[in-house]
Image 1 (tube, one colour):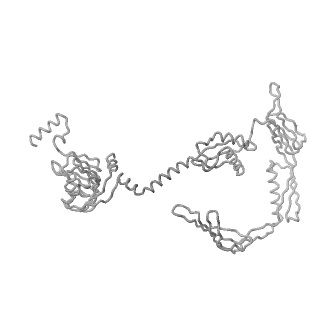
Image 2 (cartoon, rainbow over the protein chains, first blue to last red):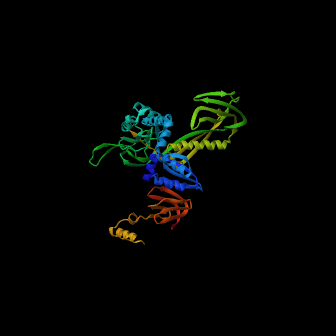
Image 3 (tube, chains in turn purple, cyan):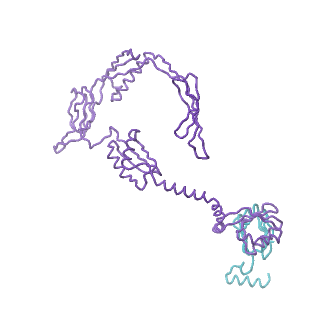
Length: 389
Length: 90
């Protein structure tokens, strides 16, 4: 291995010998201290062998003496690599310069990404991060992740957790938003009635019950107070915990249309070419003669090898659309409206299976060509909700 | 065996010297059937992909096989690679 490396460092030639007395040439060369390696016979009169560059000249008298022709088949090794690089000086300089520039620019943060939050919150977080000093083009050395995490946690109380880190040239702000019903034992408050009704059962885990079964409560009444007395008789303020069930009458309504509009394609279409240079788009043809249409694009991106040029052609196909109104059977519309009314109640904690009495009233909405369903339900449900003091 | 050679051999044994150095003979090392090296050779006599014949002080050493290649050839050593199937001392 070392020998092979030394040979490569010195540079070697792969020489093709042609003639009947190649063995004698090789023997004579060896006697003169010329070492050869990787000797291989290709045909009955052709042999290839490797030898050091400095020995090739010494071989000439021997070749003449034995009538053997020799030709350099390949040049290899470090001296030839360096010589090749010299011929491509600008390429090498460009390569090195590109490497240095890439290395230099990779020490900056170029992209900032927020994960784990809604789009609106992400925008606010990005703005707050920019105000705190995280912007595109910031040197990574000046980037203090811990400080930014502290700023974001202080600025957004709705965040439960923030992690800021860099991945290459990208800064990732990963957040976990606090759930609305997330239990926070540090809060102080009562459990109050969400809806009015007649109390049927009270369970207190912490705090003091303010109502008993049979009491009639209105929305907002305190059901379980966060004030309680500990075992030493001291008055404490804390977070009330528990559940209060009541028989309530809940009402909801929803509407469903008696006609529905469907989008249909007429079969007519129009094609338009567009030339796009960067953000500039030049239409090459007239606009579609349709009032409503659907578009479909095919794009031809111009490329120079692996590089995408900022020029592309776009073939846009406009398909004409028309709208058709279809009648919805009254029963189907009523069922749809009733289901929507139930869905609204369920979103507020009502359990459909526990409904004791259900009253459904259907009305016509003439102007809107729709039906309205009024739903009135008597049921038992937990009406307590926490309210911070 | 000539008397002088016998004496040299005994001397090498007595002094624990490498016999190939004292007796001026070829030293052949074989690594499986993949590589063979001959020290103290006297040059190539024949060379093809199927057979390589190397001269030694004691006569010809014929190595047969397939895909034979001379990995290294110097005044002291010849190293042969390929799939070696036979070695004949002539």
